[in-house]
Length: 135
Image (cartoon, rainbow, N blue to C red; front, side):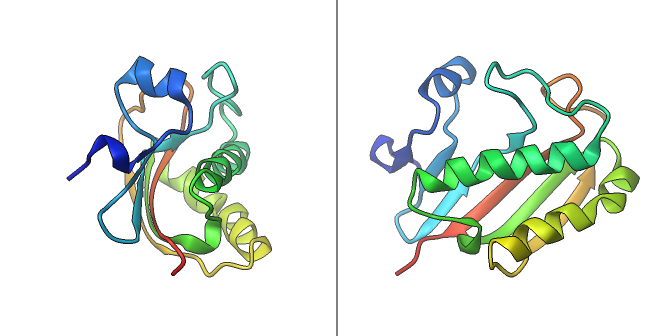
């Protein structure tokens, strides 16, 4: 159950605009992260048509979100990827692998699902993650 005191605000303006929270800590050590899209500071699509660029941007944003809870990619235990092009995602999967390797993190369990569209026009990928706080 999400209580206001469990919300870790990441971007108050966007959270209010879309009626959502980026990051919520459960009653235990678990963090639930909203889906992260490849967007710039104005919430415009970044890397349109370039899956590798979108993957890079999503993990840059994800690192920023995790930092708000004192975490890094090492804390991520699970991901669900929603993509408009599963073949492009498979072809650029090495980018994700390199990002986790550079962070000194094992890749988390993962699921990828192809969808017809994402909320942000031009976005090809959205990643929702779950992380565990260090004890």
